[in-house]
Image (cartoon, rainbow, N blue to C red; front, side):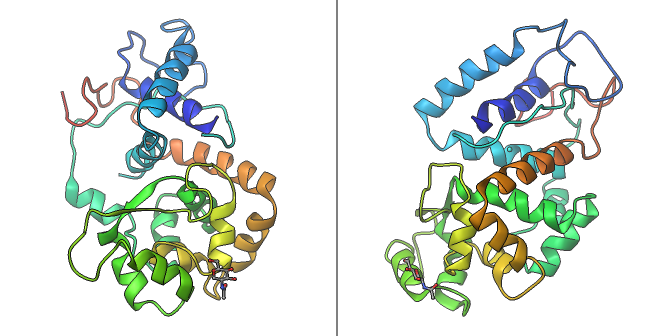
Amino acid sequence: MAAPTLMQCLVAISLLSCVTHAQLSTTFYASSCPNLQTIVRTAMTQAVSAEPRMGASLLRLFFHDCFVQLGGPTWTVYLGRRDARTASQSDANANLPGPGSSLATLVTMFGNKGLSARDMTALSGAHTIGQARCATFRDRIYNDANINATFASLRQQTCPQSGGDAELAPIDVQSPDLFDNAYYQNLMSRQGLFHSDQELFSGGSQDALVKKYSGNAGMFAADFARAMVRMGAISPLTGTQGEVRLDCRKVN
Ligand SMILES: *[C@@H]1O[C@H](CO)[C@@H](O)[C@H](O)[C@H]1NC(C)=O
């Protein structure tokens, strides 16, 4: 299960800890909270069974935290990231690529955070789970050329040209609740939901990698895990920097 190990990071950042170390470590809570993994795994299992979208929501939260995270791979999470004492919507908008982004923008924005194009393409595979609002893919299903016509018609049925902004559609048309490599197979049949997804397979630099991931689930899993570790290490606040938020939505 990928989501529980992911949650180890997420809950770790929101757990009160008496210790302060100056860097991330996989054993950060070994003495202050030795049962952390069990506690997080149990809470995560309950959260996902109550609301299946929670896995995708937490993947997204981890992404947002590290850039401004149901199956699948596991990896050893570096713990001890602390929360910022500030929050900025404009910084978030400036640092996070939107669903209409071009390949060049995706490569640049990930590059700005020290992540390679390969990391970016692997991390995009997180779109193998989760759902998206009509407002985020409307332009693609009505106006994009690089889209499977059957798929466009299917999505248009529940995402009208005007209104219905909040209508949801699965990001992975094949297996919306499974963490697998179907996302890349979808791109090859022009069934990426976001414009930014399809950009990874549109005659550009990432086509070859998408093709590899689509046929090699193990390669995708290994690259995804490696890239998640790299993303988790982006400009961390550690030691006495920042704070541990009591409510992750707002500063203490
Ligand atoms: C369009 O999607 C369908 C599945 O809905 C697939 O069978 C077909 O091959 C796709 N067409 C193209 C051109 O990729």
